[in-house]
Length: 317
Image (cartoon, rainbow, N blue to C red; front, side, top):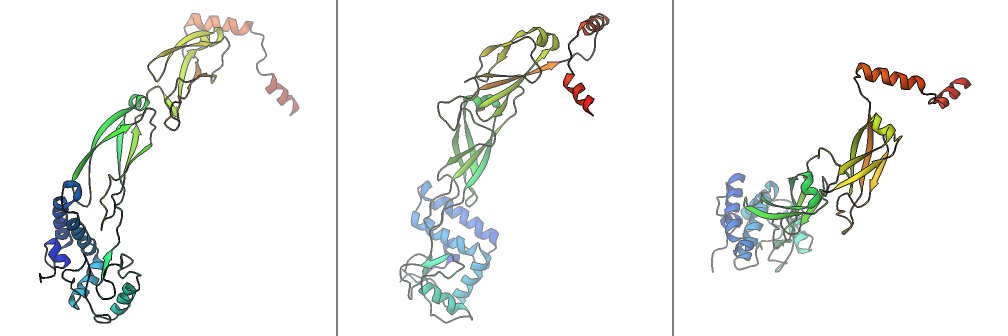
């Protein structure tokens, strides 16, 4: 009968190995035996189970105590199973063994009853790997039209590098998230991989702002254009140009809407938001002598009462 292996043997380390040595050995073995790399799935489960226990200081102490009191893995038994005598060993172990026999798990809830329980031992539950996250930086123009990026990231448990093509949809927003199933951390004991969550970081555009699928922008005009009316050619996020007709007497802050001239709506496929243009009337900060004289004449000739409401309120005080 072949000699039974304990978790230290499985990882190929000494019993006094440091956490760094244990982690290094696991990474090498995981890269060699991982099923995605064409390795042995059962062997990978075996080394994952060993690493899960030895990488946790508390579990490792409990495991070492089990070994010290005769709790060697049973040769030929199921992966991770143990042979032991209930009630043997330090005070408190009997309760752990009883909980295993009752199907409650023994080691901080990480162990559960498996084949051979009732004298043969326990095995770990399949556990899904954790999600991994990364951020992709894109320009505002790429966010409007969509873009693909190849990104490389590292799997923490094994240290291996993996590459994935990220498809950023047209209309992507800053802080948007893309989820790629089963591209995250590896699971343990046969559990499936976690997900990869990609967050898009959209660079600020010098002209356009976003409100979901709607795009906003500010167009400055002179006070003369505001008073007399004008036409302004306005660029759109899609690269086209639209002509805005500003009526005479337009005030600063006036908004104009161009339907379906904004960004694609990532939440509602086939829909495009609006382009919202806000007028900003600019007042000259410096005037020539001729301009000042002309404006003074216009002011003196203006008989409109602009502050009637203010004066009426003041009269009541």
